[in-house]
Length: 144
Length: 144
Length: 144
Length: 144
Image (tube, rainbow over all chains, first blue to last red; front, top):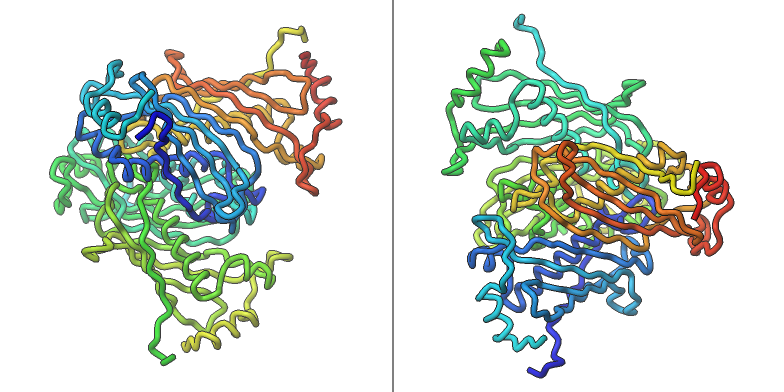
């Protein structure tokens, strides 16, 4: 794997009727769910799931989350979410997101998230990079 | 307190924009939140809160929940939810609900829920009435 | 199609992290979303979607909804929801639901819903069976 | 009103049981609801509500939204949300947010949102400042 290799997942999904607001578009807060779905898909694809990390002694709360809404998404559309892993030296997990029409690739929303590691017992922030995460980076040849 | 005394709470609430669907009315699944708000208010008023019961060794999953939708509820309305405790000999917590316009008392939704007790450690159903619940019934003179 | 033929859909789905409550199980109110997903899948399979019916001049609010919770559903499980159409002479759409483990068929939740027809312009209840619904029943040979 | 006067609202609120995730803390996506509650409160206090603006011919989709999560918020806490209006020459509505413990003022989350104006009929972005918004600014002596 070369330095410029990128870890990413793309997942198509259906909009739920309950996710559409009275303006007829997906309520802006619901995009946090689609982003989370993409993180879970990433976890499955690259073996970095919540339950595995919990078994390793950590959970990974989100400390930063941002959205830029480009176009409204309407019930009946067929969107997909792409998540791109952004390598970092810090004890963080950083992702960029894009939600777009699966067919036309027209972009609806972009986003960004930062997660840190917390000790599952003490609930203290972990400032060093957990060993399992270092090994995970090596396994997937993630270079910063 | 007489046999026909009723334990109940009434709580007014605001409809959230995110709770309204593309038909312009509160999405039917969101009423479960209003019912839960009412149960929490009941727990505060009558000292039967989730955290207290958890400290006593139990949680109280819902095993039955039903709704009858009479009229749609629209963003901007001022509703209230009333919860009525239904005494029972069984190891259960049973409530009836009514959501209505706070001013006109026009009814939007009625409902019913049944909760049982589970041991917080073993996650097993508790078939007997927990001691704290028996004492709570005596304290509030709840007769079946 | 014989009189005892049943219209139904089965759809596997993933539990979202955000759908799990602090007891570690799917929050009871979220099952309304899974039921709705099943209705949408049914609409796609049998050509009875919300948008089609809206074009015909109607929407179909839920007037009754009930749940029986058999076992808790835990993050990481692989569930499926089955929806069964219940024929009726009335101007109603009636469904039964079952959510279960996709592999073991262990049942988590069962449910029932009743929908009526409303005129999309007047927002009045429609007491007769809309023509498109009668034709739909004939097309699928749904006998009461 | 002086140039340095600030329009703001502060609103205490209860955490719903359904808003807490399996880590025992408020799920990060739910803060979008608390922010929206604050915007609605602001709209009521300063006469800038969704329905009023809709009557004027506009809706105000969010185009940017960001969160910084400082500390987890736990079920049973008594939080408050403060919203501060940020004056701008642009045809935008800009808010900063802070969610904190109502008693200790310990900060849980900060945030930022940007809304634009869309024509309710054409659904086109409105690049000029709507007249009602200019008048609203004058009325409240909002200086940029």
